[in-house]
Amino acid sequence: MAIAAHIASGMADTGVGVETAACRFGLDFIPLVSERYFFAIRKSSLETPAMQDLLSIMRSPDYVGYVGQLVGYDARDTGRLQTLEEAFA
Image 1 (spheres, one colour):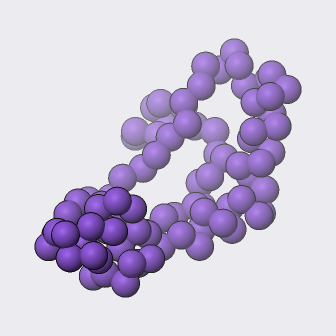
Image 2: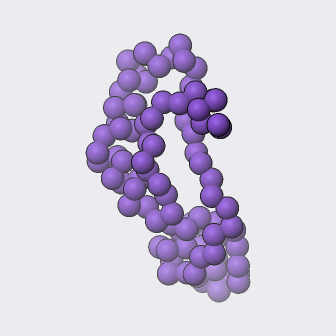
Image 3: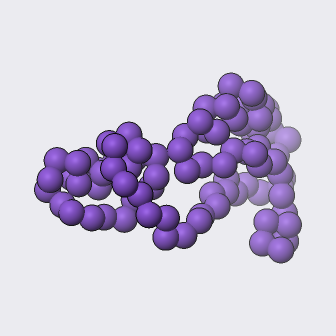
């Protein structure tokens, strides 16, 4: 957001940032690369009540819908458990 704010205010001409921020400031955006973000956790911690609560939130329609409406983000795998092998196959 800071980069987008600098560009929008005329303090900078270009910068590297995310599409959501560019969109919020009405800026043009040229994608350079796609990234995937992961929440990493030990398998032994998956069954704790706190982690089950967090997974429930991450899988909820409201949360997935919120992330999905952010320009430039794809929420279809939000809350899906994957091994390292599956994630980087």
